[in-house]
Length: 533
Image (cartoon, rainbow, N blue to C red; front, side, top):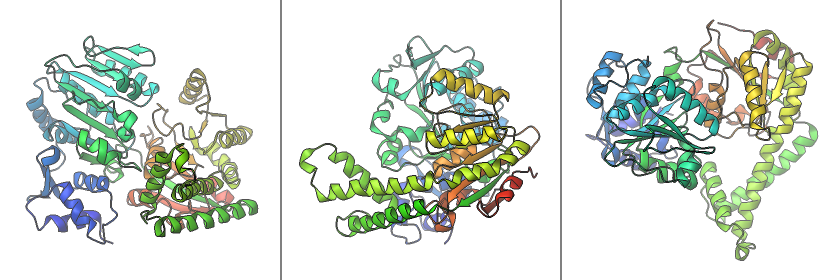
């Protein structure tokens, strides 16, 4: 199948300029691209130098560039662009990377609205602070929305360090600062949605949304106030499983103005080189019997929902539509015997139960045991991502017995204990942190060398977040390593098409991607962790 960029070039070659909406209409009628989501189209347009954008907001159009694309702008060139926005030059002293300068210029050129999608660890916060400086230079005010109190703390410290003359306030976690007494307020979405955040009359106003993909839900989307004319969305993965991007985020922020993926970040030396190993383990007999029965019933329900009840055939769209039907039915007694609702509820139950069998397979702890000698010899810090707290506890005990001090971090821990464990991990007193998904987003996690994924994952976003936890540059230049344990002959299995979106993204730039049989090649797992430059 042709690359999406080549198909887009074909569509643009017959027109002077087309909006994303027009392009989507054409792509939907093209069998090569009928199932491509809008966010992937925007990401490709923003990340490929063959395409040029003119205009902003709904009137923006894309066309083929009529000249050889220039190299990424030098800081001085971008400084000139920034001065057109801010006489104080908001880029001065920030030591921005070339991609950050490029993204800032693209955001400014798009009317100071847009989405920047950049993989974890590349410096989105520093880019946003340049935008905050640009706003404050015009006597403006800025609201930064972040999903957790941990990130409120992290952003507040960084803003105070890099914008020292500004008064930085907080909204949430017992704090109730506002933009009348402060230049910048860092808020959680719950607080920003519940408390009116007024902008002083006549002042320019900027809203920055960190982890922006999360604000497509109605409750969090209420924090996106119309009073902020300047808008910047930051995310590693601009995608959702519902219509939140089309209905909430797109109308508010506009489209992607800069996409910075592994294909640029690795060659640029912005993130560490990385190696990936997929480690397959067989289900036990009882697990296999349970999985196969759940799989058989889920497939039957899938056929019934599509053929009898008129649901979409595409698995992702089907799942979203089924979940929406169940949510709408809620506790309405009048729909308790509705056959469509009953089929949807059972489908969700069977799919989730099937996933749980694979995610918590006993053999995944055997993978951890096989990796332990290699982690002991070749890793300073390791993160292990599990599916449940029980699985995390078992993995931590196993690693500790193998001589690797390990602790769990999860939502049931008191905040103080969680911070202590992460601090111990940061200073080297703790070699391994094991967590059931709580470290995916919204937590300031110390840099690690190796990530081990035991949890079944459903989206490209989860894998990018987990790989990002180990991609910060190492002082000695050694590569990051990611080990993904999967249950063989299940929907986790790469040979059955699992992880396709993620693999498409990393295969061209990874130093190595291998598949190992964890049952037959136990010693090879530990050996694979040996650092190879």
